Length: 224
Length: 224
DNA sequence: ACCTGAACACCGTTCAAGT
DNA sequence: ACCTGAACACCGTTCAAGT
Image (tube, rainbow over all chains, first blue to last red; front, side, top):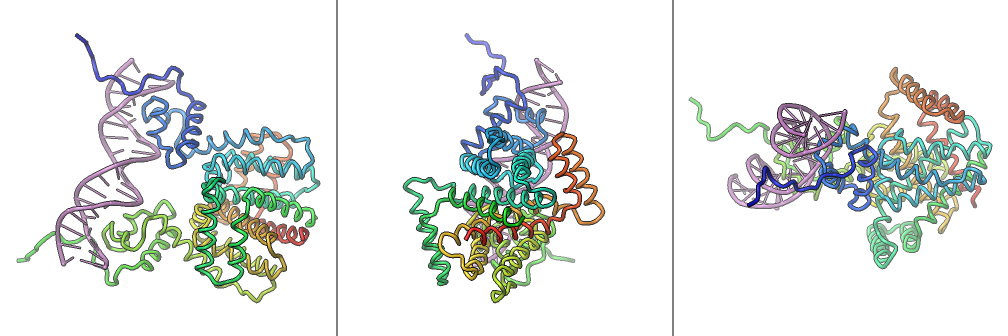
């Protein structure tokens, strides 16, 4: 005979105590595997084997959670950039690092466009500001140059995260781009659209992103 | 004595029939007055004096509604740009027009970053492509330049819509920027951060945006 | 102090029933 | 064909009750 004082709990109890770090870690795991739509307080508390209200003891709301998760990714990227490098090279390395991080974690691209003064974005401003200074750009010229670069990076990141990133580089990709190009040319007889559509078929997002960074660097130098 | 066959309907019946145009119009009105958070299917159908399911006869879902509303704003902006103008001037006019539209309708800034091939974004690509062509930029150089400019514009728009735009240019603004600058300098002893914070106090988002467009134009010319 | 999970006040979308 | 509004399957957040 079996004595039971209540229903068997569905989730085994945690072995480690809850903490902000553990919660953010689990948030990143869910975002990476299930995407932004998959991040719900219910999914998060299920994974952490805890009650729904528990996370509100460590974090004020879901927005703070997303900002903390994005900062977790971005701070790792920035930690890898060598600050002794040639300034232009440092800017290219930094930009590409952010681009690649967003390619791997598309939800970061969306998140960075949501709140300009969240920790991750301030980190990027600073990461761009240092090499610009070493490039000899000072005062309001540095503000302008920094703002231009940061907004370009964040804009490319968001567009890439929402679009081509979702299509793998494998078999499905050329098909997807061809369908898109066909749709454009059917809707619009303009030869400009036709030429753009043709280029779209063989373009690479990463290369195009880096070309944009170089246009910027050229403009900053010419501007002086 | 009064005969009633049922409860009095809470909303008076519409005088005009429902249509996609009327629905998009009402969507823009709600977004402008109540913001993105205020746009719910319930609020929309209440304003249109109809049942919740009615809009699904004209529109597939809420995403399509947001994309159509954004396209309504952007197409008006692009219609005003004079295509006979000097190409560089046309690019500045177009960029500023989009920036100002997003300053007035911040929800557009958020929406444009959500889906790269929505009608409003394709319209912007084309609007930038034409003057670039007239500037003598062709082939993959035009792809690169166009992508750089569009991503810069959309990135600036999203950041502006989410941030300083929310603070009016009146009395509250200097206070807000001073508080932000103070927060930065307290958290970080780096002199670079201090200098940036000082510049932040007196910076103007619109001017900084235009300075970025000029850096781009300089870079495109230098790049050639 | 920290955690639990039911309850609350919402969502977008569907669909049988009406006109 | 178009519309209605109840019903469905979710949300994020709160809070009394437990340990």
